[in-house]
Length: 238
Image (cartoon, rainbow, N blue to C red):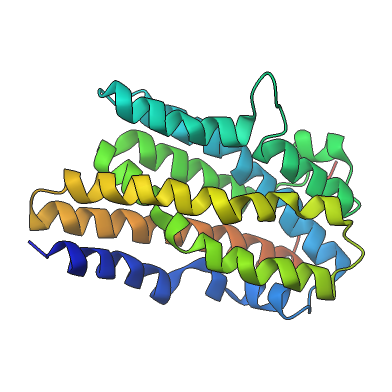
């Protein structure tokens, strides 16, 4: 087996090599080179991914035997769905982002402009979580290791290059600056403790790579449709 330190280093190396912050679409975003419509398209397509996150976490929770672990994991669902007393979870915040960027809430909720490639990629993530071991499902969520640095770049990029996006729309990104480190600390420790062989450690690495590939595919679909070559599906929006 790899030592704890080497295992964590190898997990982090997955993000250094292939996290979607390196995708050409994100590079364009952070350099302020997206058009209004291109940024809107990303927001409305990424919303489909946001809707699947609590479903993914519910699928993981359903397989957890330890009540203490379930109590910790349920916070992820509450972060995205909100609570009865505070319904403004991540899904609500993303809808606010869409409205702040000039999108119609009803179109986002209806998933009217979600690209086929985005649907396939996001659905594949939920299927992966259901079909693989609990350890692998949790390991796939460790892309949160890389999220805080991405959010730290995204916030100033939006404020500098896309001032037409109203400030209240950026609350989702601000919230993830504190939520992601908390979540990944628990998830990382769980994966480390559940990997008892080198083979399991390698499975965890592969699970994290697979999640990175899924996020990359999501951006591939948006880039292909709205940047280059700019080919939207036929009958789009009808």
